[in-house]
Image 1 (cartoon, one colour):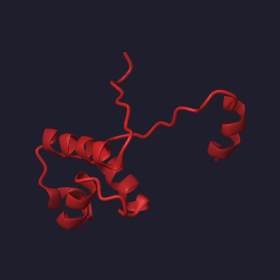
Image 2: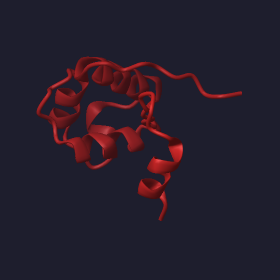
Image 3: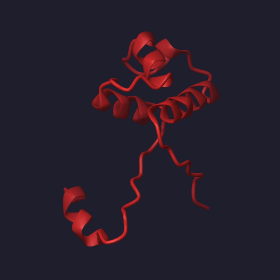
Image 4: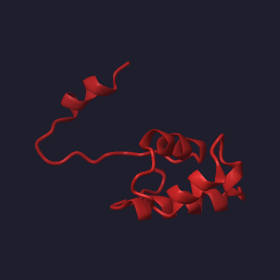
Length: 85
């Protein structure tokens, strides 16, 4: 069975999902990896200028994965070379 997926269309929605995952794990903001509680708080409220690298690291810390749906016309094979090690 595939894990549930959620369509995210804004930084606010992404932040709400981060908050949901953190609370589900019974973590305080200052218990998420090496991040300050202020950074996590800003990410959870959808601060549009949050550093994307740190956001991805926090998502990984919370066990969240990001998937991108390709628009029509871009073949999967074109993207494969970007993700191959």
